[in-house]
Length: 293
Image 1 (spheres, rainbow, N blue to C red):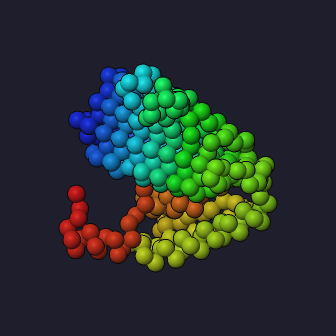
Image 2 (tube, helix red, strand yellow):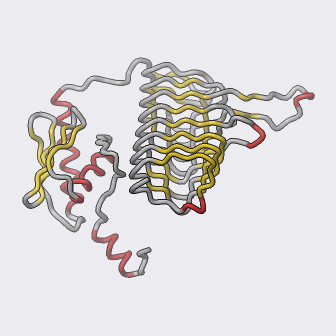
Image 3 (tube, helix red, strand yellow):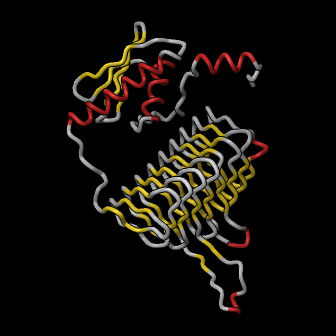
């Protein structure tokens, strides 16, 4: 577990396998029979994980959410794939099996349920306990609720505050209460080279503006259609946005740009957590009020 940063007293498990370069905040609490976490995963904030089996893949960022399965539910299990984003106050119930694919973005206050029961079933009230499966390349936006037994396909965007009570097919945009399919077969969309270059020009212009507030300067330019050349002093780093490959120097400055690309929806995974350099105004505030830990 080289490179793992955790507070062990808040991780209570019988069986664990935690890869390198995993970061777990000291505010987290994890209680499982079996826990597996892949390299490059970051678990931040007051995240709570309580279930029998929890499998989390590589390069995930999980911040301030609740993953929970009741002890009375028996085999409470969750499997989260690779390169996912799960944000604050999301609640993932895994009383039944919950499976999440790769590159899934789960927004704030999203709730995913595999179980629902509180009223007397002898009076005719419902009891529901069914698995939920979510494919890959899915964006579940803030405030959305996914009901038990739902299958969500891949390449899907779900609008804010929707209630997903029916299965969703691949490639659609869906929204509403209850959810309805608004457009079908729109994701993924093949972009032309010029469209990609327009995106990269916008990215570079925004980063150059951001550099005015950073404690360093760099040169960033497009080369060879959809590659980005990042230069700082005598170091050069090439980001191939088509192949998602990085060549050349890997420095704290190029890592700052890698994190900015992630923010702009262009993700390069290296097995290490993303890390950017704080702007000058932020450093001044931290220094002024002695906020360093």
